[in-house]
Image 1 (cartoon, helix red, strand yellow):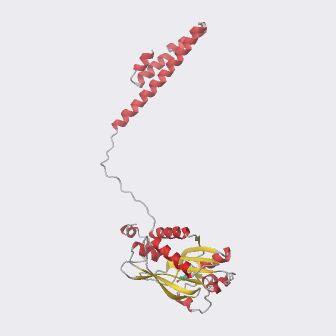
Image 2 (image 1 turned 135 degrees about the vertical axis):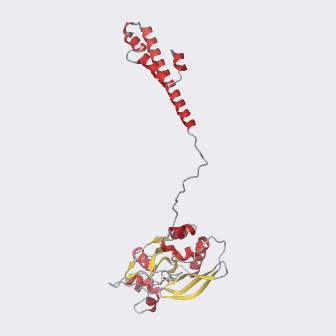
Image 3 (image 1 turned 120 degrees about the horizontal axis):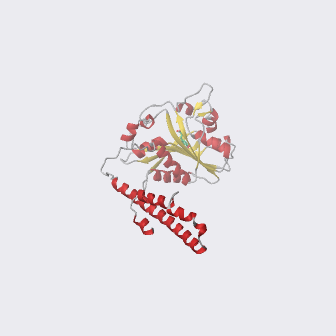
Length: 315
Ligand code: DAH
């Protein structure tokens, strides 16, 4: 019997033999029924035989099942020369990608990310930033005013005020958000992304500011070395104020960001003593940096969400 099981080659035959052995009228079934008439040794021998045969059936069954599976697989040939169905893979939008890069770099410098509301009140967008009523900077920025006197945030500088109001000093933060102005041409849109950096502590100087800007731009544009030009400028919320230009590939100077030492009035407006604490702030458009990084001619393309353009531009 044992040899017979081992030599069976199909599952059907194995099943038939199993039934004729262990089924209702099977040979082993009949012998087991008579076990009560046997002496102890014979009982033990029958039990052993029963267990061995069952084990053999099980082993042979799984061998035969495995063989059926392998035969089936061998029949299914895979044609690897067939062209695959084209895949539509998503990618990060260039703005998302550049914002992620910027955040990672600033966070590695110890800046913490903050956000704020797009609809701002006059205090956070202007007054606290040392830009009182009738200050020309309010016109300069072509503000969208709301009927209730609030504004669509014209600058993420508003976020630095909120950050100092809630978390106090020392503080090292960057604010991220969309800002809104009445502008529309190839390098200006009515909505654009801005980043605002702020570092206030007891011993912060202009050279800390320039050091961080240089390190940031070098990392962002993945350059070994960059040439910067620091020009004196004017912003109501910084004193002294500077503008930072960077030498671009064709030796052109590009205006990259505004910055300066935070004006004592701004600190006072946030309840901070300017005789103890001081520091710097800087602000730039992150879509403008994306345009430079990816060599894009028109800022507005970034906001049209035209997948054909995104694909043709390599995103
Ligand atoms: N808020 C300025 C703007 O929108 C950018 C800016 C300039 C921010 C100088 C700063 C700064 O923090 O120090 O044009």
